[in-house]
Image (cartoon, rainbow, N blue to C red; front, side, top):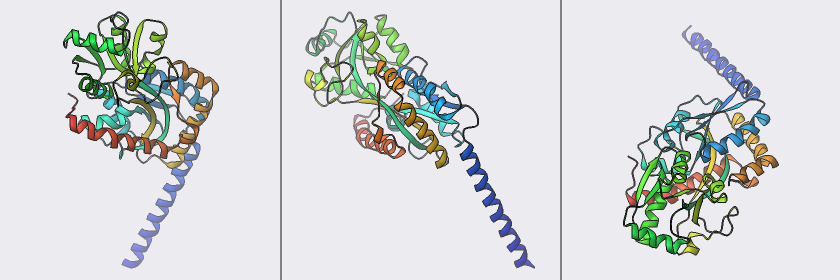
Amino acid sequence: MQDAHWTVVRIAALVLFQCSVVVCGAHAQSYPTRAVTMVVPYPAGGPSDTLARVIAERMKTALGQSVIIENVTGAGGSIGTGRVARSAPDGYTLALGHVQTHVINAATQNLQYDVVKDFDPVTPIADTPQWLVGRKAIPAEDMKTFIAWLKQQDGKATSGAVGVGGPTDLAAAYFQKQTGTKFQLVPYRGGAPLVQDMLAGQIDFTFGQAANYLGHVRGGQLKPFAVLSKKRWWAAPDLPTMDEAGVTGLHSSFWHGLWVPKGTPKEIIAKLNAAMVETLADEAVKKRMADIGQEGWPAEQQTPAALAAQQQAEIERWWPVIKAAGIKAE
């Protein structure tokens, strides 16, 4: 009788498991049946938020459901990113992130989640370099005269940074070491308030995400000095690289990607990836992205595997640098 009892139990468990697989499969096939939320861990109006809104507007056509942007700010992007890590893995909560949220924060903060193990990658989205850009009234016209001006300020000049211990901090630390200059770093919650203070003359300069400042540079309201890429930037081809300007080896960009909570069904990830690929191929989207200084990831690399590889390569690049410099977010 006991053997018969356990046989019945095993059969019931198997039936329940098979039913759950069928139900999960059905959910994945019908996904999405309601609006999807894309969490942007930075303030509205900043470069990540602007990119997200360009993407979300077109993704809703590809998915057949609205894509709602939710700005969850604070702690260099880790609060919003953490919310996604703790969300249900059902494809309805997405994380728009970049090199800070999914690489640097893990080395500078005591996070309550793992930037690799608690997420599944969907696709790389876009890339924009950092550049050194300052308020219009700075009495310098190139890198040589800018460095001379910084030395004259003797530590009184101010440089804005998004968060503490992020890409701008790393670039600033490298720059000071290479040029023998010193200046004050002023942290901001996001790129939008930083650029407003620079336009108002309250902050002298920044090592910022180029897309955030391009319109103001083109309008003559801000002054760029060099781009932190190995080659000249397509959106500002007359601007020298840091290498050309005499500060060698300072290369950094803000690449963006899309992630979902770990355990999201592969079928749902595939649907999200297909929607993003369709979105990035849209000529109107390409133009809008170019207008804000963002360049879409190459089509052949718009895969979950490519985003995972990019993240891992940047972890291997930046974590040792951060550890050696002793950089920690406050």
